[in-house]
Length: 74
Image: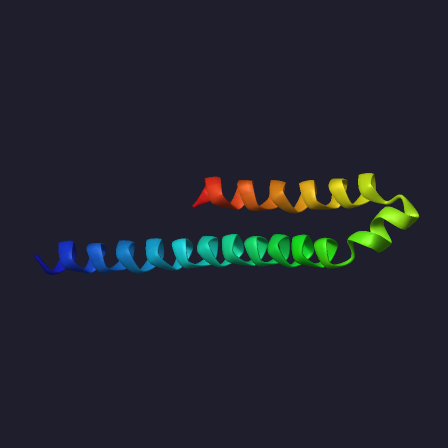
């Protein structure tokens, strides 16, 4: 019984730590995406003036891809 309890405790602790790290990566990716979206929206005129729509779209897509990858891992 002690061996089973010990293995269960080890498994639970290891799995929980792995999940915590994955959730942390997901939250970081989400925060970066939200920040970038808000920043781009606030500076809409500057982006439009200098014709950087494609650059901003590419950068935002890369951030979303990171978020999707981490969401799938979770």
